[in-house]
Length: 305
Image 1: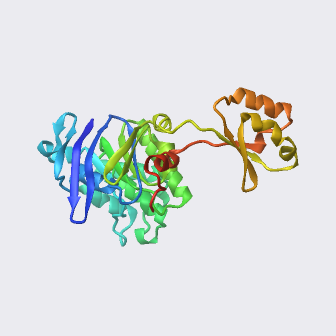
Image 2 (image 1 turned 90 degrees about the horizontal axis):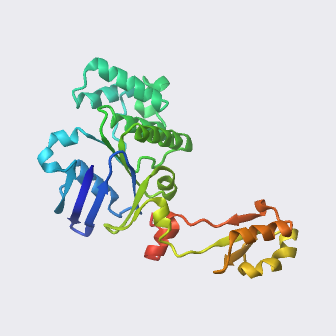
Image 3 (image 1 turned 120 degrees about the horizontal axis):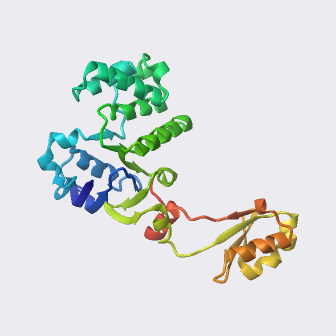
């Protein structure tokens, strides 16, 4: 659907993008993750046409977006990182303004506005001035403003920054429903748990380069195999911990025992040993690698804020 070919962008003091190549598939929920300053927003702004690339090209359904012009821009929607709303107007008037940019007939626009406001839980507050909205409510309104013309591709540039948990969950739920109904979504974030929760496929970007790309399972398979298991330290586990040294190296980690499994480790044998020693599974925690672990493994450092 969308092919991004060897995109480069240089600013006076930094190379923001250094040969980005990606293909976004139709109806995909694609996550672009990385720390602030990695190049996420620069790429989004090039995709929508706000910035010009220095090198490379982008194709939409096999055609260069420069040739498609306005017909391409009508097929995309952008949820910007910065909230773009008129604070002294209410929700309905804001959406009428954004809808007018796409020549949507008034009757149809009214129906779309009511539908979208209801979908994100803002219908009852539709006549309130935006300046009286919470940050999360503004984010939700910002989101649906990008969807009034029913775009084929929605680009979300860190849409949950500074959002309360209730609004974050409302945004997640709405985006998942939107994707299920057929909208392709490109979602940038530096919150790893968001990408893990939402995205079918994920690209990790840092210093303007894609350093890993794939499904969550494919990405985590890039990590060296390692199993770490934590035991709650209490009277029972303390008396039985010696029994588990056959499974690997045991050390004390804060208030827990940490077992670093050896190459012969088998979960079936481990859980059998737990049962034999009367240790309830609720007293153990199996370490599960995540995207942040992968990033640290690939770059040798934690995510920058």
